[in-house]
Length: 392
Ligand SMILES: Cc1cc2nc3c(=O)[nH]c(=O)nc-3n(C[C@H](O)[C@H](O)[C@H](O)COP(=O)(O)OP(=O)(O)OC[C@H]3O[C@@H](n4cnc5c(N)ncnc54)[C@H](O)[C@@H]3O)c2cc1C
Image 1 (tube, rainbow, N blue to C red):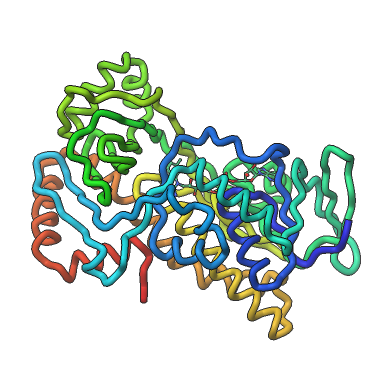
Image 2: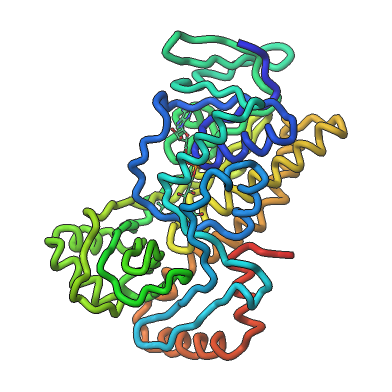
């Protein structure tokens, strides 16, 4: 096996995007993925990709692979039960769209096609890093695969994007904090809807949880419902007809004709945080480093911003002859990214707390807040930019 300068471990949406970005800049990259038989296609989630993410996916050659499966989103309608909705429109901030809805399985397949056809990526499938050991000058990296274990000189930089369960990181002595949030996300595919606006996401925030309805067609949509685990369990224990009645009440939809396309899928939300997410020669990104609650569609979009900026900084560092594997250089990169992570953290941590509260005082404050947002376009634009991480 050849020597490698940059290696990425984990070919999920974050690791694959990073490897493609590096390869497109002419930086050869070794991509190590523990799966041996490609993507499963069983992921039932429907993602929202921001306009900024869409632009980057275009640059790294993934966008073309997805044409036909994307639904542009031009507006988001947000409300709380009993209040008038607030509409956020792409044109308010001069963007062509607010983002795109896409099936997670289609996105995974598009990444797979793109990495397989990229000559700058050396893909090692069914492989995982067993050990990074000391040595001169850079140490060695042991990679285990079906054909045995091979040792190669350690890359100058290893980026770990192994998702939430990373056996390699557990052994590396990183400061990993995990906490069960006590919440779950239910992904529910619905049919028989009437009057679905196909380019609009509807979000409902309330004490029953946070609901985001993403259109698929004029009569079908995918609901991502983030709620307390005990409530999720109660809901799932009910028969489908009763589940539909609950959803029609929560979403103000006519119950007649409303049906489930398939049984809901449940994701238990575990908070994971690594601080700092780097050390000499190793950087951790994506869900391996920071998990983000799904309701505001931020996690992957945030990690892609991390990856996009990393590609730019690595290219600059290489031209300037900097040691981009050094802890000092990685610290500089992380300092640049930290404020974006704080912004997303504030958004995703505070909203559920704010809308869970049934206190009359908090409810009155929320109502006044909605009224201000509805009537002050400047504030709406600021919220939209904040939510999208869009700073032109
Ligand atoms: C219900 C739900 C809805 C969501 N909706 C959105 C949304 O609309 N928009 C958004 O931006 N985000 C959304 N997210 C968040 C998004 O799913 C995650 O941020 C994203 O999938 C993380 O990708 P990743 O590449 O970091 O991890 P993963 O997708 O988990 O990929 C990790 C990869 O590493 C591989 N791997 C694991 N261990 C090893 C190893 N030891 N060696 C080598 N390879 C290994 C795995 O096989 C896998 O391919 C949602 C999340 C949930 C739960």
